[in-house]
Image 1 (cartoon, one colour):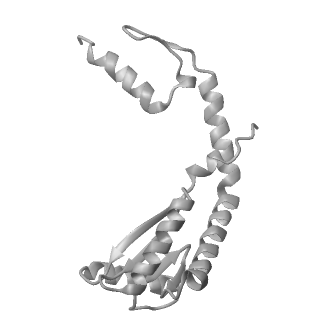
Image 2: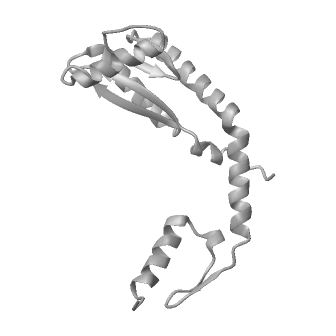
Image 3: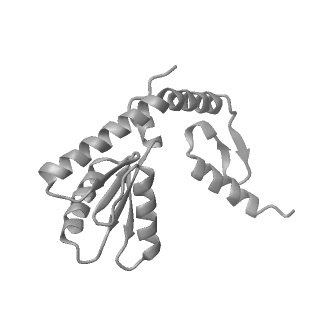
Length: 165
């Protein structure tokens, strides 16, 4: 199996659920810290839930807390990998705990699915190598093994648009 470096890691993402309220200074601090983590880690996705104006988000937060074996009715509350963090003290304290939790969780996900992901990528690349170039009217010969799927789709759709059938 070919080694693909770290590029395949982009296939795996970590979703964190952030519950916050308008006017909450601790929520604002945590959001700024989370934005920094998102800028640092392309695999991190933060889903926001505003709770002061949305009762459905409050119910979701309470249910997610119960699912983790806890309870909460305060913000900020963050859920990552079935773990709940309530409140935000500072980037050095709570922020570092959240950072460690996210990185550790992501590493666990990669260990659990990493080999399967590498094999899937190798299988796709092997399949692409076996595809012969396609001869298209107007565009000439296109090699799918060196084109991105969106570009190949647009090329085929363009030619198909001129199909009189």
